[in-house]
Figure 1 (cartoon, rainbow, N blue to C red):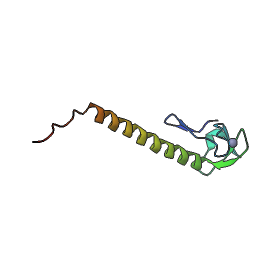
Figure 2 (tube, rainbow, N blue to C red; figure 1 turned 90 degrees about the vertical axis):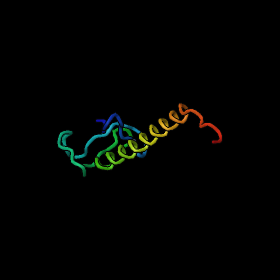
Figure 3 (tube, rainbow, N blue to C red; figure 1 turned 90 degrees about the horizontal axis):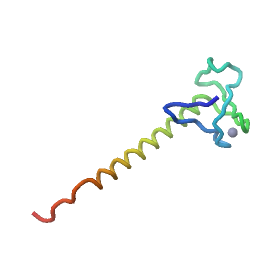
Figure 4 (cartoon, protein in one colour; figure 1 turned 120 degrees about the vertical axis):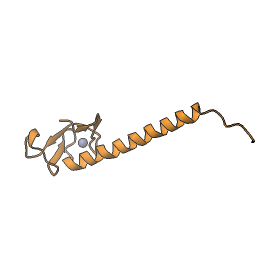
Length: 84
Ligand SMILES: [Zn+2]
């Protein structure tokens, strides 16, 4: 299963795979401390760690968006008249 939030997918820290299996519980019973096993390389993580990773990505993404908006705005801004 993919761990996804706001169109951001969590990646395995070892192999960057995006397919995880909850360890010991069914998909609908996942809690924050549920161990998640990477389907590709078998690395263990926890559900909360994957959600935190998504949070970090979301922050990075919104920072990028902000910078893009600022750059766009600076481009649109007319040059200030020189002198007074
Ligand atoms: Zn992996």
